[in-house]
Length: 321
Image 1 (cartoon, rainbow, N blue to C red):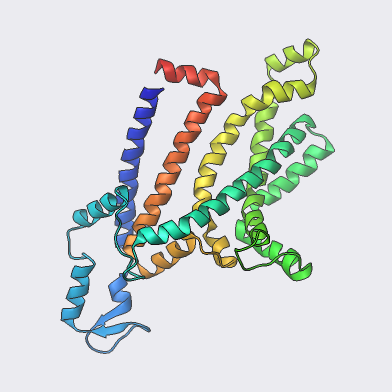
Image 2 (cartoon, helix red, strand yellow):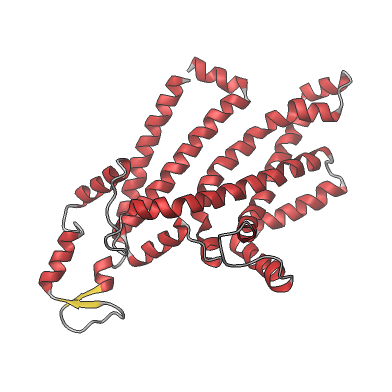
């Protein structure tokens, strides 16, 4: 297990460096820069909202933001700053470290994503079990149809539908705010409903494979009931595919909350990332992207370790490796 963990950590580090390099290249390849979009060197400003500055001031800004350093030096300092948690200063918010923005906004996005995943699991697991046990029955067909529709709907479309029904028509829930528990209901449901559909289908298909296996037939032949088969044997083995989905979805959801944060005016990191991308705020783009990449890599590692807990065969393969 230790050798497996060491190899995975090494792979994670290499993948992290590759992601950081690709992000930096794409970021610099995008047209325009923060300075060109906000400052004009002499003459009459051609961009609305930009400031006219002298060539000396423009050069001072370039030096201040270290934009005159070689590309590999800039990339190295971005990665080093993130790994040591001594990041640079945001272009959009002068004098504010990107660590302060991340420390303030990321916990909100993480909390929102975690609540959505937990809500989806609470609903998807019993739904998946019921549809698998009632295979091809009316409950199975109707629930899976609803799940398919829910999976096909993007979260922002679900958000608009929920706002229309529960806020505008019924006046049950607020649309904007994040101080009371009621404020979280619509954002969490907007993210959870598409996941409920996909998770329940994953669990149903996996559980059906287990219920059609030989060992389940043997347990039933010995007098075991379906409740005992599902609760003691089949459900545990069928959770592996669901674990594969949950880990990356939680990590990806923290980035995918950007639409929900904009719709409900929530102060998450997705809001700051969108603004940074529009204004070419390089430090905030790099640091937020590396943060998301790190979370996804860690989640994938936790998924692999959870495999070993749920399936003894995988755990033995770790020991043999």
